[in-house]
Length: 324
Image (cartoon, rainbow, N blue to C red; front, side, top):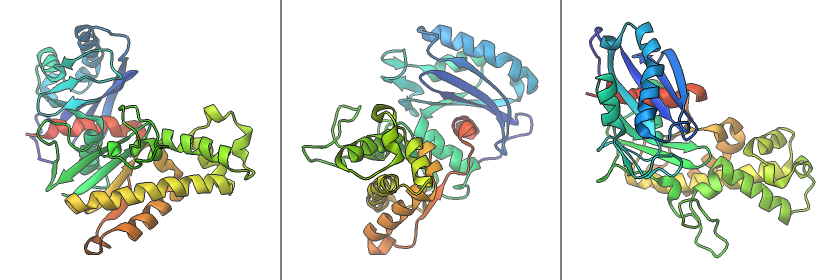
């Protein structure tokens, strides 16, 4: 992270989700000194959204000493394009087509604004404030409803020719006739197996195929979550442990393949699924070490994000604001 003058010691980070948008004013140490939020889905018109965001931001900007203390703004958003400052065809946002979100906020606030997608923002946040601080080559894997990724090479996020590089969650894992349908329209994507949603799908399938007794059988199969599987694993449930072993093995093998193209110092895992701790991390590490090419063995660390889940997305977005 570049040092900035003390005259502008803060940046704004915006974590834009399909339901809510969370804004934070952040200092160079990664402290969120003020925070606010608005409903994303309450504003079908983008200009109304920006106006509401500005109104919500004004009081906390004043708390920070006024807009003159803010260096820039960073936005982490679904389908955010770093090159163009746009959100492009985001399925879970109300605004259709290409939205010039960076330009709109620059005009509203009078400060520079940069945009990227949420997984790249997570990687930037980890590199700026978290366990990847000081690293120049690592791969961030976000394990939530889907699987996202941010790839950092030589200290820079990889954006590719169009701003959309690094969709590792949509690498095809399974090409069999039984491959799982993915929300992207294809079948067999990694995220259909290794996301929190994927864990729940695996649980339902294993409950159908197995006669193994399990506390998971006491739940409505359609409402089982990855957290339910974790609670069962904590009780020593054999089926729950098998579910995590299956999931972690797939993810570890995938990471062994991903290491080939950037030889990372680390894989950093972030998201709700990482709360399963050693139940998910142990099979990831075992499968990774079994599959990794000899020349890469022992080089990459497998780490869990050090950023608080409630703050990580805002911090990630804010890291964009320090870029010159």
